[in-house]
Length: 271
View 1 (cartoon, rainbow, N blue to C red):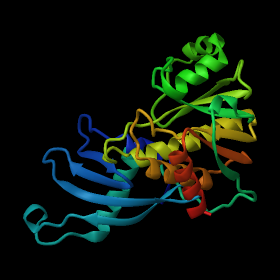
View 2 (view 1 turned 90 degrees about the vertical axis):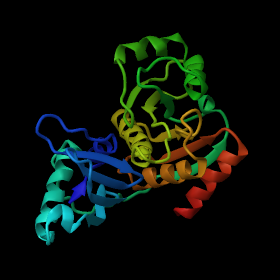
View 3 (view 1 turned 120 degrees about the horizontal axis):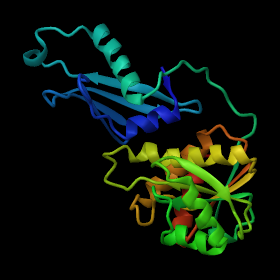
C-alpha cells in the first residue's frame, strides 16, 4: 500500500467518527494511532515513511491484551482490518504505485535576503486559512505586490492547512505568488510534520500548474507558527527532494544567519 500525499494530509488532520463509525484517528509525527471510539482504548499504531511516490507503512503494532481481546488475536485478520481503517481515515482509496524517479532533480540553494526581492518565477507566501492580509512574510508580500493582490485574494475564499493556491504577482518581480497555510506547532502531536511537508509539495504543484521553473520559499511555519527551526529545515528539504515537480531551481530565502545555517545544513545532510 502506498498512500498519496493528499491522503496523508487528510490523515494528519485527524478523524472523528460519525454515527456508526467506530474509530478515532490522530497522528504524532509520522505515527498514526487508531482508538476504539466507544472505549477510548488504543488498538493500532502505524508508522509511515515518505518516498518519492508517496508514504509507505514501515511498521505497525496491534494491541493484544487478552483481557480486552480474549486469549488470542488473529494477526492476519488484524492486519486486514488495519489496512481497511487506513483507507477510511485517509478519505480516499489508496492505490499501489510503482516506484518512479524524475530524470532531473531540482537545484536547491539557501540565501539571506528578502523574499519579495527574489528574481524567480514564483515566490511562496505563508498565508492564513481566511486568505486575509497578515503580518510577517504575508504582510511584506502584500505591501510589495500592491492592493491588487488583496482584491484577488478575497475572491479565492480561503485555503486549508497544508494546501496552496496561486495568484499573479502583480507589482512583484516574480510573476506568481503561491499561498500556503502552515500548521501551528503543538509538539508534533497533530500531524505537523506531514502538514508542513504538504505545504512545500502543494506549492510545487501550483508552480507546475503555471509553468514556474524557479521558486523561492520562506522558512515555512518557523515564525508565529512556532515550528522548531532545524526540524522545519529538514522537513522542507525532504519534501522538495521527494516531490515530483518540473521546477528546476528551489531557493530557501532566510531571514537571518541562524535560519541560513539550518537550511544549508539540511541541504548538505540530504545531498
